[in-house]
Length: 138
Figure 1 (tube, helix red, strand yellow):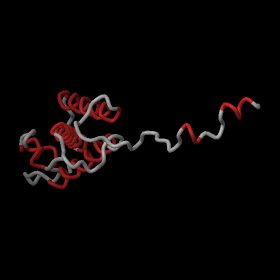
Figure 2 (cartoon, helix red, strand yellow; figure 1 turned 90 degrees about the horizontal axis):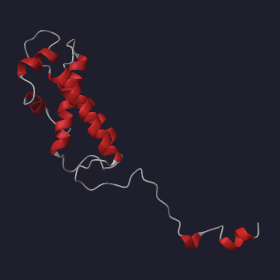
Figure 3 (cartoon, helix red, strand yellow; figure 1 turned 180 degrees about the vertical axis):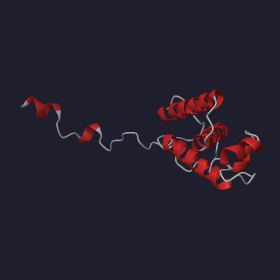
């Protein structure tokens, strides 16, 4: 997990967290819903980072924590009956855009990148089957 429920409560007020998760009107935050939203966000983040970085990340940069919080808050709105406000929608769109940039290499986390997903060859020029001399005879 890139974040914890405590990270979410630092961004949205407890009353908002209750409103987004308290389907049974208990007056408290449903931690299971929060953890489920965090897990969903982690999956989205991993799907973008896996193209460039070995997962799980050994160090979680602050930018990824911020993205995880943004995605989680959006996920909480999505599962509730409340309408997502424009600020949250824009933050979500920006977070996904950043993840796409990281995935393409246009943005970096400042961590060691893996070569996974990049084409590699074990051949050299000396191992050619079709040399210029062989091709001339055709």
